Image 1 (tube, one colour):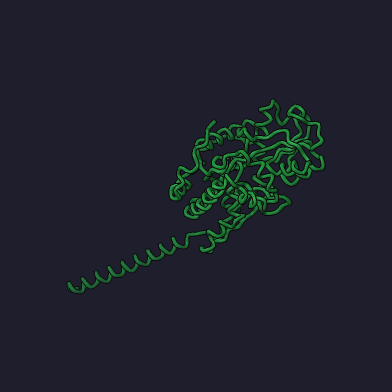
Image 2: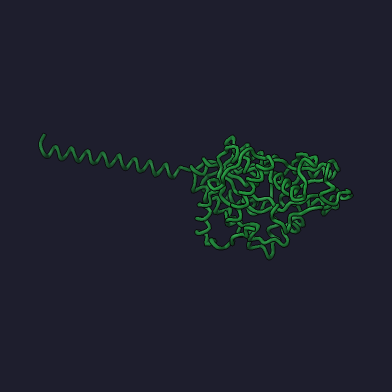
Length: 358
């Protein structure tokens, strides 16, 4: 073969290599561009009053109520599917375990039960503090915790209410064994209190609705004593996070903006509470529940030392009360990396201060 022919052959080989490389790069770029889900499955624990598919669990709820998450992904052709589980946290856990949910707000105990059971999830952000109340029928003779001994107490077992109920009872010298605890969801609890089929119930601000009607009175509230409140977090399925980190980051960005909007309305929360009433809980209940609370503390999305300490204690207490079979270290479960990126990019790194660890 002549030298010219050899050079010509080499040129063809280089051209072929460049064409092949270009095609591979094009396919790679196309694959990256198409690397997005066709649907985002958002699971929500609980339903609104009357079973309506709307809940009001703080800023996270606005992603649904105001349509913010749907708007964020509409331009990408990504559908956001919202499901509201009457079975609350335990039902959401089943969805995660069976690969039927990608992301959710979840109370402390159900998220701990799932993680302890081997369900692969990550905690991405805080999602609020929930005050709890113990209510009895308005004409009940029950006045204090001692009067609860032997009585029927409605508790939604497997939810954050369950862990808090155990803590509250223990702090007052009682345990579940001293009462007849009955597992009831929110809807059934409200009905049972009204008909006096239970002697008492522990719940959130939905109980304030019955109080305002004169149907019940409160014998206990966590307001002013955050040791016994419910904590919630934004929890994501680990496979979804690993496959679509940029999508998850956009969800967190939408959530952070909603949290800031709520926080900015502390001096005049009318617009916030009006939106929350779509859950069926009246304006007055939210006003009573949130009054005197620091919105920057209540709504903060930050995974700070307060939240870490709280969840370490939650895991220990869940084990102590027999609600989980084994303890675990939360450090590898909490992943604030995407949230911290979002806070920095939104110029909100110092907007929500560290919450007191005591």
